[in-house]
Length: 142
Image 1 (cartoon, helix red, strand yellow):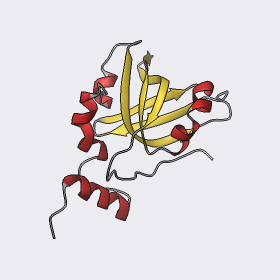
Image 2: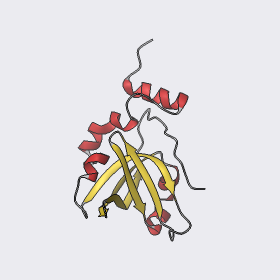
Image 3: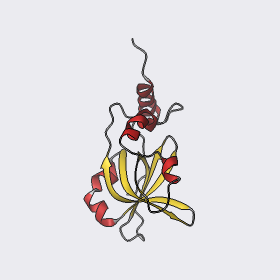
Image 4: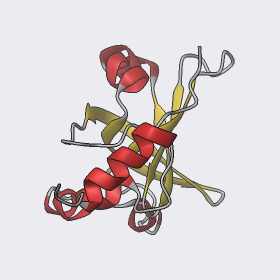
């Protein structure tokens, strides 16, 4: 039997135990993400307010507070950290499936830095499909 690749090991870890002490799933795709112009969380957080950018990661939290007038808040995680994403109601209506069920997404949007709090105001959200990608469970609104 051939030894597992690092990606296969991460996939097996998450599918068997829900976590991994090895590499973050996004680390396996970082070179490809860079080719597409997609920033990691740490790089995105260092950009200037108002910059148009793309970030990607696994959705670890989905929130839709009743007091938020239809806004949805996502937390995307990659190997460098977490990016908070603000989804306006009209975008949520158009990309409901991606926002509610895709484990990995790419977000194109505008970086917002308000009183030291960094987030991305989403302009579009697309699902990412990776072969042998580990399924990371998220905490979701119901």
